[in-house]
Length: 535
Image: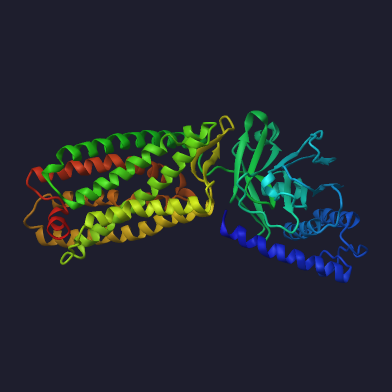
């Protein structure tokens, strides 16, 4: 759930209460300041008053521009939320279909079925259904009497040109209540027929919500499941507002997505294998040296082993009927990813001590303290998240497959805000810091090269290998994702998948070169600094 969604909803609720008070005091309803459209004969918002409002909005679809219509729809939502009714009521005015459900007693969930001619919530499915909605019991508390509002607006001539499927938007709300962050999501099902697919063969459906502040659609909090065999799209959202299915061009083609999946699978498998080999080699030869830098590299390798070990079976765990394995994989996957980021940051900090703070850098129990940060900090984050929201580690829908229509799921963090802060936010900080350390390293190598050019041959080649190795250890290649947008999306993703899925293999090569230099009597690029001043 994005921040702008949260901030948009609260002012709307406040305005709706003020609006209702104004209606009661003035006894007049007007759609705009010029009072071009008026429902002034209704002194309270009852069925006739709502019908009047719907007729006004319906007329606006024929003459007004999109921006004006959106404002009117927003006002109509407030009117529907403040309608005074004692029983469930349906109101249909040409292209607008409204259903006001009066909840009483124990609420166990609600199923709404609607067409352009009829709408019901009694469990029956209406003929020629265009929208089906399932609302979870989580929506209302036990014995909470409240009103649930459903509103469907169909206007191909206005909404169709925006890429909205069948020009249809669906609004859902609970009167006098803001609904955000549902664990059991709201499901909205709409048909996606063959004629639409044939006319827009290069596009795919995307479930999005309408932000009244910007008059734009956003995906936050919604996932899309395209059930191609059944000819319908299911939108699962964790909040209530106005929703639509947009036919959009995919950021990458289906063939590219499949190739990237194979690259990731093969690369991560190779990395896992070579990382395990690295650990075995270190364990069998650890008596040959006690270099602190090498031990930091090994800790990073262990974090990457955990990451690959839980990433590879994530989709299989999500496909299981039991939620236990998926929760386990989601927690360990998030923890190992955070640990990987933390150890890349430690690599940057250790490099800083070697190249910048060359003298007087002795730290007592240095490796122990690094280990407490490297493994303890991610654990604290995961525990705090589990305490705040224990259900956030669950199945996450990535994207619908265009081949068979089924959604691709994995086990990970489902809360968008927590995912943004703990994953993207943490890595952004690590990336900026380590990028600075890489710049310092290159400057240091340049100065050393100037001093020793006349005495050493092949210095440039060794310096290049050093920079590439340090780039891998610092996780700089993960930052490619920040530049994968626009025309660079597809090539950026290919580069990201190749380099990062093979990060473990590159670390294995670095380890082999390091051991070769040590056995050959040449200190590694950072050995002599670490042993003498940091151990």
